Image 1 (cartoon, rainbow, N blue to C red):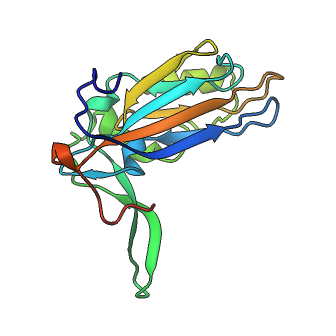
Image 2 (tube, helix red, strand yellow):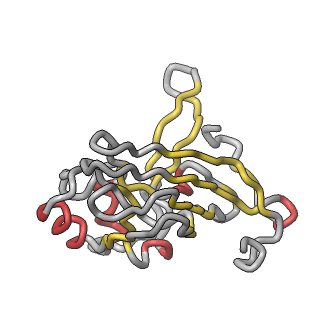
Image 3 (cartoon, rainbow, N blue to C red):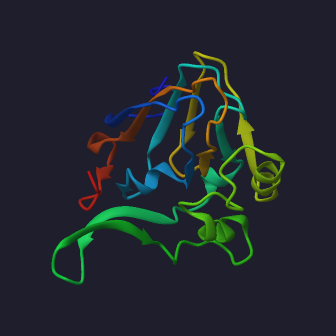
Length: 188
């Protein structure tokens, strides 16, 4: 699959098993995976999200903002020298990233690492808030694989339903044989 997507030298820097238990599973705020898995000279992160349980709006399915994968990266979570002379891990905003004022990408700066509108539970208000800025729910069946570019804005709401929503996730990046390098100040 990864070769079919055009990867020449795929490297797997991260795998995760996500437990989103029924009734207590927390939200995941809006983000771009490339913020955490930054490559140079361009972004190559590929998210592969395998649904181990069926996921819908009630148990915390993914929400993604259509077309946002074509927008620039807005933040980098990096290890950089802080003002006190020690390394700090934090989000560094990329303010000069080419988003046009008034565009959805420009407005997305306001809700990086938040939920647009602030409602973390699935309800009519949260759906309205998410849809108003272009997010769409991505319900899946157990066994479905969702693949997306690391610049795609995505999130998930809390799981207040009794049903679990577990996933296994892989994050790939292109490697040195393709002329791509892991940024030296990546957090991991």
